[in-house]
Amino acid sequence: MGEGNPHSILLFIGEAPGAEEDEQGRPFVGKAGELLTKIIKAMGLERGEVYITNVLKCRPPGNRNPRPEEIKACWPFLEKQIEIIKPKLICTLGTFATQTLLGTQEKITFQRGVFKEWKGIRVLPTFHPAFLLRNPQYKRLAWEDIKKLMAEYQNLKSRNV
Image (cartoon, rainbow, N blue to C red; front, side, top):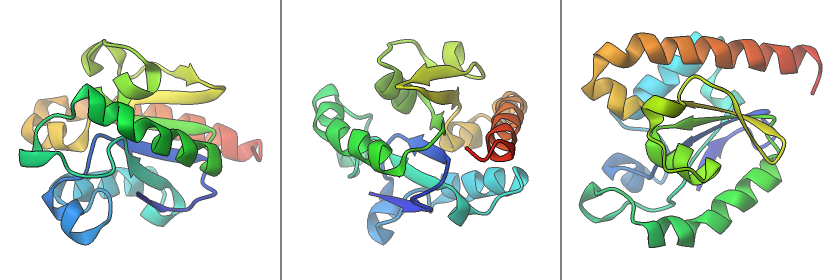
């Protein structure tokens, strides 16, 4: 379902578990997970200080894109996770997580790097780490997004939110 600090002010939301995640029962443990962990460390944090989850709670067959009915079936679980964790800041990773949370059909390229709001929570969409591994030319843009995320995280921490 997810992993990390259930009291964190920062929540990362991805798309769905991959093969390695399914095997281990943990989110973001494959190559994309290694990159996400590096990103979190670059923010000056440890992976255990944040909370990480996915929209879908199980891997779609053949690692295909999630179908609308699968997203709809998993939505109540994600919504309840967010309600329990009460983050002040969410980073959506990739198109599916962003579209699901924000209720939009716009691709991540049009959403990334700009803070949005969902139920009073600041949301920053950025590229999924798996996308960045396939398209390293976008890492610079993702880093720009992460710098904005870090600044907002530090702002919230300094206010003891």
